Length: 81
Image (cartoon, rainbow, N blue to C red; front, side, top):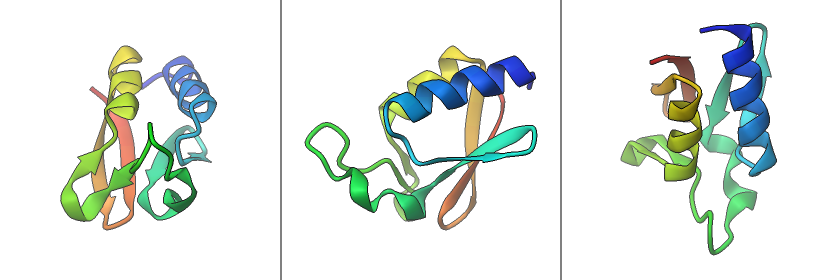
């Protein structure tokens, strides 16, 4: 995973309001920070208990050569696909 992939994907996810949290050299998507995203288009961003990730997030990750896996019940780690 390159810094460019990380930066571009993070910026794209931030632009759509996804619950991303920046870490040194990587980032996570927090299922615990999705409660204010309850709009018609984005009803649920990330729900680990149902193994769900919003399709818009998945599309952005794939576009940048990235994927995700659930780290715990509330956090998805991002990694190179």
